[in-house]
Amino acid sequence: MTRGERKMLDKNLDLIFEFEKYVIEHPEFAARIPRDAIISIRVEGDESFNRWSQRLTKKHTNGKKKPVFLVNIKKMRPAASRIQELRIERAA
Image (cartoon, rainbow, N blue to C red; front, side, top):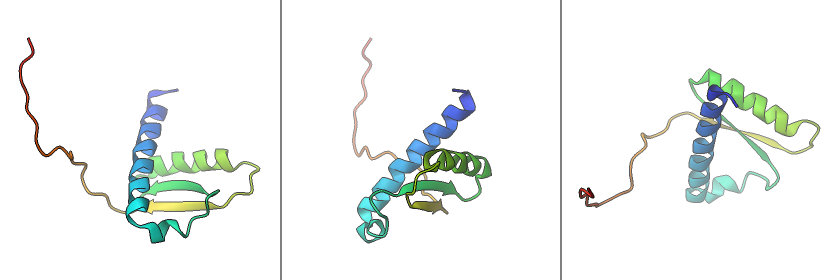
């Protein structure tokens, strides 16, 4: 796997995780997606990722009769830590 492919895979995994959190928070949205559906993620403004994601979707749907749903991410909040309090100390 090339460095670029790894970068796309890591981004896809991050976006899948964010999508799963969104679905948990919006169950009415999830109800519209069949259990056997293939989800293809797109990010507005990131054409390189979108082309990669489209190729991945084609690879996973090749010859399969499963519904495909496109998730178009238009905007994301900046990543933030959920840590509310911590302590740091020098160990050595």
